[in-house]
Image 1 (cartoon, rainbow, N blue to C red):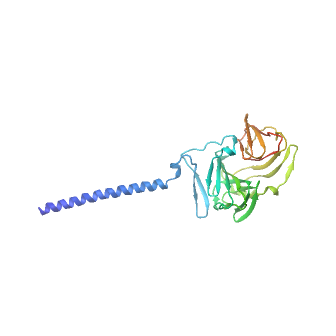
Image 2: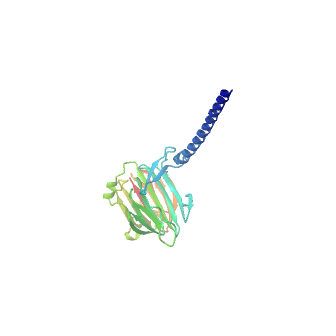
Amino acid sequence: MKNINLVSIVLFSLSSSLVFAQYLSKNHLDESLNSIEKTMPLALNNSNLQSEKTINKHGVVSEKSRTMKDLEPVKSGVYKWDDYPVKFGKLRESRSIMEGTSPHFEYLEMHATTKFPGAEPSTAHANAEYEECIIVKEGKMEVTIEGISTILEAGGVILLMPQQMHFLANVGDTNLTYTVMKYKSKKKMNIERGVVAGGSLTINKDSLTFKRSKRGGGIAYFDRPTAMCERFEMHITQLDEKGPSHKPHAHEETEIIMVLSGKTEMTIDGKEYKASAGDFYFMDSQLFHGVRNATDETCSYFAFKWK
């Protein structure tokens, strides 16, 4: 009888141990799955996001494409300031303008940021494999690149090489608004080419020369190779009267026109568009296009193109 009771006790203990082990195993599995879900790349949870960003201990930003959704080519046409979705933050706001691919870029993204007075500077970082072109729309910016600081005002431009530590700050008493164009070429990045051509640039508008023309005038900013581009050219055009800047044409370079003042019209591949201050035109490579002043009031715009 005692032996039977002993066997029963042993069997009961083994059964309890198995149930407890199964309970622990299930809880451990649930915790593991929760942990994986929390730490898996966001691309698996949100197919609208295109890249996964990490910042190493040196502040270098590394981004890799996600496979959940392929980027579409940026569409030629007009991009209106009032249509940009706005995201609000602490003493700042940002506007998404465009994101996609182009004939020469496997990644092209543009956004505008406004920092209100007293806003924190951007976090110091370096882009591992992206180049940037930044245009100051309004206000006073202090840009620091590899420890060297420069003050830029409206019309100021930054051409920022990859792998350069940098940050931006509003050092004025009014809002600072700037546009960032971020891109990665389809061809292999060539840092040496960019360095030989002059490296990163910071340019104030008032340091450049305005040259008069029959239709108005213009300001040349740069025309040079970069780490991502065989050629990147940028200038401002001013038109004092109604009419075209030049005859409609096409070229290998993809081009963006950012309207600074006045009202403009544009023909792109046979379609008509209109744009005013803050709006952009995007013209794909080899598309026939031509820009015009829409009124007899002065208009001006940035034009930048690349290949």
